Every structure is written in structure tokens, then in C-alpha cells.
Image (cartoon, rainbow, N blue to C red; front, side):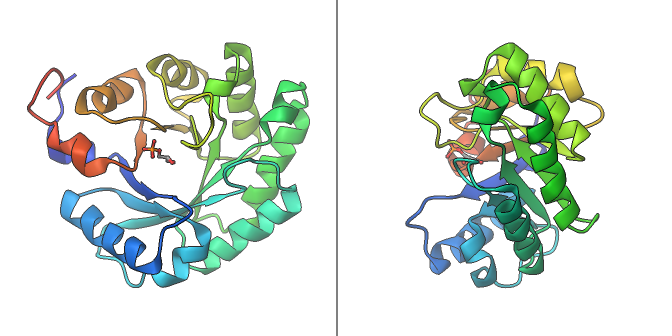
Length: 225
Ligand SMILES: O=C[C@H](O)COP(=O)(O)O
């Protein structure tokens, strides 16, 4: 598929979720995101209050229950509500993939719903399913639970799981399952222009990238530009 650098940039949540990130780092991230033309910045909830006013057109995203998903639903709901109060437009929550793998799909749906109910309707909820750690059947079940719980997006990965990050195959499966009704965010390990464009071609409607500048610098250097 053919995309310009500017078009791809508008898919990007420019992400900094490292545990050693400082308030100055997230302010620099916001400046860089604006320069690159990204859709949003995605930062840890503890730094939301430090980022300051954002340039027009740049959204603010954060994470919830990150990165393990093993927090209780009550804790995730409180975290999401606080995040929106602190300025977040979008919240990327992690499900409990152990419960999903145990077949507790209703518990996963209820976890998503608890977070959704804690946020105003205007805020967008993305559900991280950690697709690399799941079978195809589990990916489908996770997407269905996210949709039933009221999420607006499903997202492949935290970028922190040892099983790995986004793959074209997982994005295709997620898009086949909920695409058109929910957005699909590919994140984790996307390091090149070709990989990023391939994710969009597979059905991703958003990309989570910590290496946004390097990815966009690849525009025009190969296939898909
Ligand atoms: O949610 C986004 C991911 O944490 C980004 O992963 P990455 O650092 O592999 O690009």
C-alpha cells in the first residue's frame, strides 16, 4: 500500500512508557510528536500531570493496569478515572490474559466494562490483549470480550511481554474479528517504515511506536512509501 510520511504519522501514538521516563522526557516527547505530526502521545499515568498544555491537534493517551493486567478491576477503574481527570483523552488498559487463557471470557468482558464505566463517554478505551502470548482462538475471544465490554479499540501488545509484540497475522485476525466496529492498534516492536505500513495494510487503524522518528525517517526508502 502507498502512504505518505504525513499520512502514516497521523496513525501514531508516539509512546514513552519506560519506567525511568522523567517529566522533562514527556514534555520533550510532546514537542517531538507535534513536530512529527503524530496523532497523540502515550505516557505513563504518573506523568500525565507533568506534560503541560499540548499543541492543538495532539491527543493525550495513557495506560491502565500496565503492563501485567493483573490489577483488580476496581484498581483499573480507579486508575482510568484518575487518568481522564488528569487530562487523558484515551486509555489503553491491559486485560488479565491468564483469565482469558483459562476461558474466563465473562470475567474479561466485565473487567473491560468496569473500566469503560469509570470513564466519560468522550474518552476512548483501547484494550490491550497481548496477542503474541495468545492462540488465534484466544485472540478472537479477547477481541469479542473487549467489544462486549464497550471498548472502542483492541490493541495487540504492551511492548513489554517476553512473547513479543505486534505481527501482521495478529492484526489481520483482530481486524477480521472486530474491524469496522472497533479500531485496531498495532504496537510493540514496530521499528521500520515497511513494518508500520504493513500493519496498516493488515487493518491497523492506529500504531503505537516508541521509535516514531526512526520509522517515519524510512519513508521513501523502500516498498510502501
Ligand atoms: O504501547 C506501545 C508500546 O509500548 C510501544 O512499543 P515499542 O516500544 O516496541 O515501540
